[in-house]
Length: 135
Image 1: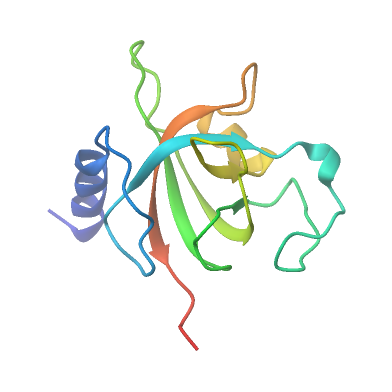
Image 2: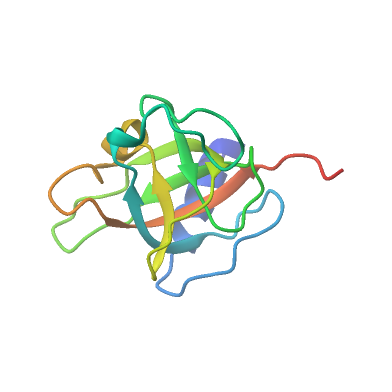
């Protein structure tokens, strides 16, 4: 089994029902919970790290992960068999500020995993794949 297949298998198996604390460095331990997405009307406003928000980029907000951390977000399977889609995003903002939500995705990222739509939320797991070097 190659390394990529092993990673995907571990990631899929690790997405249990219990939410886990966000790891401070690259890890195979997932954090699971609810994802939502930013409204495109915020385009042009500064994010918490000072960048200008662009809804077309694959970025996200997280309350504790360091800025520039890269995470893979995987939509959890639902009772209808939907889910499993993944997207890679970079953390450049803080949020979400709604209890029970773990990440806010840009519209571009949300569309990839099917969060963009009627209710705009979905159960996901995220795994840190690249964290900035500690200074």
